[in-house]
Image (cartoon, rainbow, N blue to C red):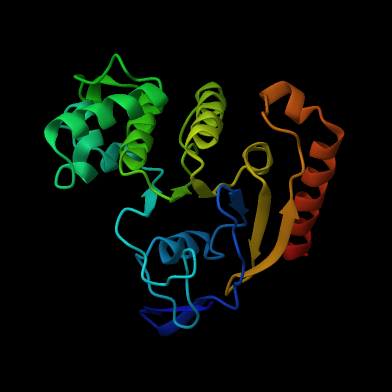
Length: 246
């Protein structure tokens, strides 16, 4: 797959020959330096940008149905509607497809999944940044997506909140089985969450590494980071990023 977009100076190639397969239920982290096309790749996967060449297929189909692929963005503040309650923000994607009783039950279920069952009547401005991001994740889960895309979902959060939400995400993924692809600038986050980590490098960006993370699950912050394999994966990823700038 390649992507070319128009700029003020004419057409510019953003991604070149990026090819990979992600298994059902797999978690894939994508790392790379700024400007290598990571967000563009996620937008192509989410159907927001069209590839100049190549296809994105879900279970052999290129015409993904609405709701099968959902994206969670880093800017949770602008992603939520401040005049709507938490519950009504979460229900946005299912208001037309479900009856009231089923919709309310679905909202209650996903809020319980992200640990916000007691905040359904609150508004976004009454919540911390971490809680607002949980609301955005709950809204994505409400449509029961087969693929969850996340663009630096925890990048704007403090270290303690980030670690908490990493564990929330792992718990959610284990329960839902949704295929999850996320972008991060944090190598440690990529390793902790992922089954594989992709490294995108260069301009135009290309996929240079697909590093398997064969660490046992379920994972915990301390035990996983102390595992001998963790350090070897971290070294391989850091080396790939270092060589890209050499």
